[in-house]
Length: 412
Image (cartoon, rainbow, N blue to C red):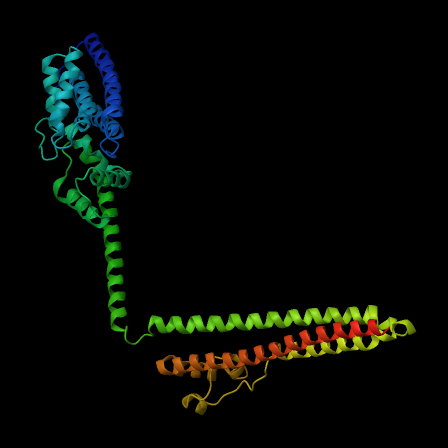
């Protein structure tokens, strides 16, 4: 441990006051330097990281037996240790030493103190092994994020920083492997305080990384198995183009059926209105001698409207089927079990048996879908033929009625 040098209370107070002022000035200097010269790509090595290192340095130093001058020199080194990033990444420690020397010389700091601060800054190199107690303190403080509950956030900042500065582009999986290697092989705490108070959280962070890695591995293995099964059963599953063909055609048939029903409903509504108006306004007035010439045109209009209503109803009237089939029909593929009209009276167990028969036979599935399409086409043909007749009757009725009304008024 560093030698403890006892001082008079007056001397301790004087040094602490002097170096506290220097620390406050250094903090302002580093903040201003980072704001003006540090690129925005440094998401990790920035002022926030420096503040964390200073805080961790104070935490360790307060539990260590070091003199005031050494403690303050340690804090100044913590403030200045990453200032070299404002100029370059590689060898930034040496640049930080140059910046620190120029800054501290302007503050008239003694040479031996400047030398100590420079020595502490150089001790923060990744591959540098600390030799003194002060170097061990700043070394542990610089890597204290390994033992913090916010490690995952700061680690992601570092990964993104490496990507933005074109140093390395690690995938999340590769980055987890790098972190595991760092935790288990490259990093360890040097001070007794860090080993006692921080190692538990560091171990917890390592466990979290390993859990995520294991979870990702299981997910990858699951996806790999699914891919193999997909390749294995590719020839046994329906082709996507065939599925799309049936799906699209069925959807189009259903839309056409909806359109036909809508047209029939329109004709029903219009003709019902015509008959209602005729019954309430025209027919009661036909008893009058002056209105008898309107009887034939009115009857023509009503008769054609009734005929249109009947044809509209016929186009939308559903056909009732037996709702039953036999096992023999299923085995000979003589029934379409996909249409509700063929099974609505069947017991559930028998229908379930029929479904099991079809789902394991790809040809039967295609045949059932094809038959369903054909039957829908037959129904649609009937609907649209009746609709065409209905529109023809309605149009003819309107024309003949108008002509009849004109002739009736002309004769009168």
